[in-house]
Length: 306
Ligand SMILES: NC(=O)c1ccc[n+]([C@@H]2O[C@H](COP(=O)([O-])OP(=O)(O)OC[C@H]3O[C@@H](n4cnc5c(N)ncnc54)[C@H](OP(=O)(O)O)[C@@H]3O)[C@@H](O)[C@H]2O)c1
Image (cartoon, rainbow, N blue to C red):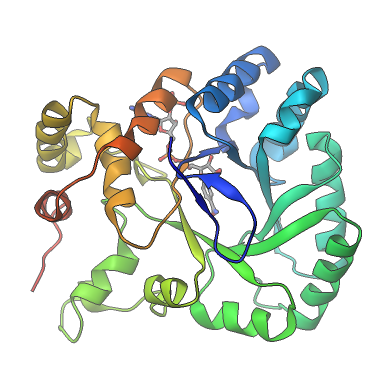
């Protein structure tokens, strides 16, 4: 595994993180085996959210930490809050603080290293967010703060009031879902690909040392599932297979290597629940795609370039 220090922090993190959204249906034994595998591979970063599995993902992970308290010091735990299932979003001070307290209880820990605001709240009052963050930091419950699915202006607005740096923006990104990359390369063109749908979030994050954490790195969409071996993405799978054979890895490994090849120093959040798939994808840090291979994959997902 390779590591880097997250900008504006003292956290030395693995280049690949394990996302825990899908562990809710697993047994504690299965989750323990997955965590052990991750740590064995050198993955020290674990992504959660209060809503994953209705709280069950954090609960089952916390059960493992209860059994194995020695593991806690070996991991960096990130969780998210502020999506309210069935209602929507809530950035109020009371909601954020209660959500974090709930996560800590389920995770069986007294702190998380990072807290993200999961999705923008139209009714966000940044002064209140700042108060919530101050309290959580001062109580020792959260060390660093970030966001997910936020535009540059939304981040700037928060940052005007929050005294701690916003260090993360977790965003959907894969070879087939690359909206934030597409518009930049189709600048000033008339086609739909040129539409800036995110306010230039990729360059903004790079300019401000905010780490992008790609999510759903091998998903085509929620409805379609993964693009790996998906007949709707035949051309892409062909190129993935050619490169997989060339590098002696799997197609999923190449899909993650495509994200790591981007110079923004992104940290992909891998959502597998399988120790075998996790080991395959961790191999991506050892695959350095050439510039041409990166573009071959981009074009194989049927996106035009001017
Ligand atoms: N911030 C946000 O709004 C947001 C939204 C969604 C997710 N996330 C985070 O991002 C993480 C990853 O998201 P995700 O789970 O959608 O992403 P993902 O890593 O693209 O997808 C994981 C899914 O792909 C399957 N898979 C993995 N390797 C495979 C392979 N080699 N062949 C076929 N299928 C394979 C997995 O099945 P197996 O378990 O069998 O491997 C699992 O069902 C989540 O855990 C969560 O932490 C954040």
